Image: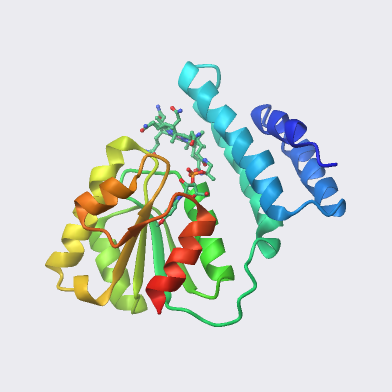
Amino acid sequence: MADFNAMQEALVLCDKDKLIGLVTAALAQNTSASEILNQGLIAGMDIVGAKMENGDMFIPEVLMAAQAMGECVALLKPLLGEGEAQRGGTVIIGTVKGDLHDIGKNLVGMMMESAGLTVHNLGVDIGPEAFVAQIREKNAQIVCLSALLTTTMPMMKLTIDAIVEAGLRDQVKIMIGGAPVTQAFADEIGADGFAPDAGSAARFAKTLGR
Ligand code: B1M
């Protein structure tokens, strides 16, 4: 039986080696990658977030926890796919300007790749003009914007405005997501869709890419 509590605790303690050991042992016991991700890693990161908010954990520790989680996500990556062979559209994905959070965005990109889409991950702190340039360069059909901060959500609207101004709005579907983002916000800023998590984001992108 996988020890999800121990995984959460190791993440909170930033004990990368212990966390990797627990994840590896859980995989060896045939625990599914998505259970490990949701009940171990994401649940642990929620505790980190609460501690950060209360001042019980500080940025350097949160970064260490994020790095430990990133290594475990890389271990899970080959097992998280939905196994669909059919190729979908071309996606560009990035975290909007001013925002450095990338774990969730990377997960969304990975799930989309595994679902058969061609994904170009632009990284973090990506400004509207860079998104516009990358739509042209990659000939993207789907643009995915991620934001984790309430203060960077308005940058999603500015990015969509820039895509409209560049005359590219009709060529692309735009999806947004990230912890503070909602369907109502997506409707308000004229996005084509919102997804609350990486799995549903990949499923939704497949429908947009057709
Ligand atoms: Co930051 N941070 N952080 N942080 N951080 C949050 C987001 C926060 C909620 C913590 C808190 O106070 N409780 C808070 C935001 C408050 C708010 O705005 N409402 C916060 C803050 C305030 C800050 C700073 C301002 C702190 C400071 O400097 N004083 C600062 C900002 C820096 C910046 O970006 N300019 C900051 C910095 C950092 C670190 C750099 C230390 C680090 C990021 C490291 C990294 O990403 N490489 C960090 C971390 C790790 C967090 C928490 C703890 C964890 C985020 C995470 O990775 N979650 C976070 C608290 C929390 O979320 N519980 C917090 C796990 C990840 C799998 O989930 O990213 O939500 P998530 O992604 C999900 C969904 O949202 C969705 O799918 C993913 C997978 O299911 N999703 C999409 C994401 N993008 C999507 C796109 C889609 C669809 C779905 O379509 C396109």
